[in-house]
Image 1 (cartoon, rainbow, N blue to C red):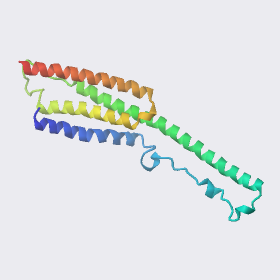
Image 2 (image 1 turned 60 degrees about the vertical axis):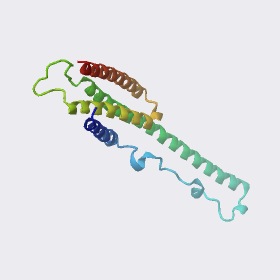
Image 3 (image 1 turned 180 degrees about the vertical axis):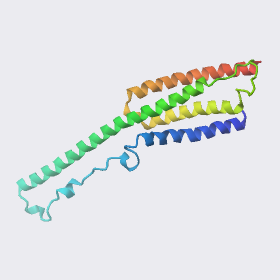
Length: 189
């Protein structure tokens, strides 16, 4: 492979990977940017503060104040847990979107028509260095993007995402297997 083809592959990957993640954020805008983290914290000790002269509180007053603070903290924890659960489910949908998109591009890279080794060149030639770079760029970009999405959304535990990931893995193996025989036929004649 010459440097020009390698540069084309690299350029495709450098644009493809951020494009996929930006597209996921465009189509799934919830829980992105400043909304990606739980923002609902209230300081329960400021909400239910001890008075300046806390020593003068009776035991019942002190206990009531501590119960209010404890209840507030438990509500905060429940709200945060609910936020995390909703975000995990939403991120699972985003992961499925990214992997489906990558699967579609992997299939394009797999099934773009190629000229067989030994086949006469047509006018114009279907097998150009740019076409090989595009195919390898799409393949590499979809694999790198899938890897990045898997690392990013690992904790979603998406069963559908996992099934798509297995299909992508098998498609990757098939692409490498197909590419090996294509190159062998190409250079053996």
